[in-house]
Length: 241
Image (cartoon, rainbow, N blue to C red; front, top):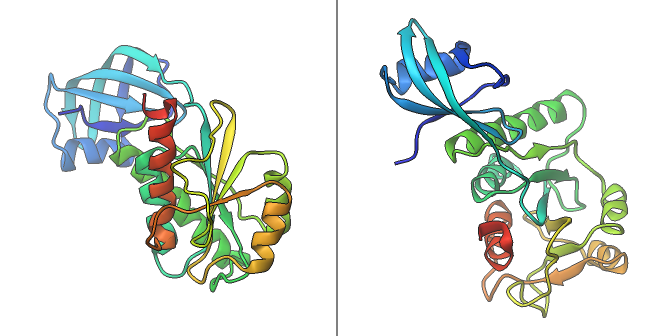
């Protein structure tokens, strides 16, 4: 079984006093013991292998035994996820993070029911970012995905024009399992909303270089499509090698 992982921003010292929410989680929820091996991660690629030295009230003192820096995978995969109602957007972020996504780009597509405007939008973005952080911790990742601000279709088109892009669409002729994939650099995976990508969006995105692909014979929900597509890409490239 892999060591429990906790998040800590500064991994430059030889000893760490894990406090706050992470210290409480380690001492009270996980109930780590003196001498137990645990890992710390800063979310930016550094992982510290540690040993528990002592325990206090919601505080755990750790000795850093070794550090390693995990490079970014190749290619980097950015999930462009259309906004979804309820908790489906957060589920999409959670699943994609567990599979290994490198960045999440919220997209305000034409058929999105929810609108990220004003304080409500900031709150929703905060939930996506918190979900990515917690899912990264749960899946023992040293590097957590960045969740950027939401983009309009016009803003997305500008990124697609300069980055290899695969657009998931149930009507596409080409299967994701067979299209060429880049060996390095960035790759965009675009997932539409529950109502689907409009014909206008499909035309505009493919006109600037996006390649429409399908996952299989069944239609996958917006909350799971990104994670499924990312798994296919990871298996076909060196990401999971």
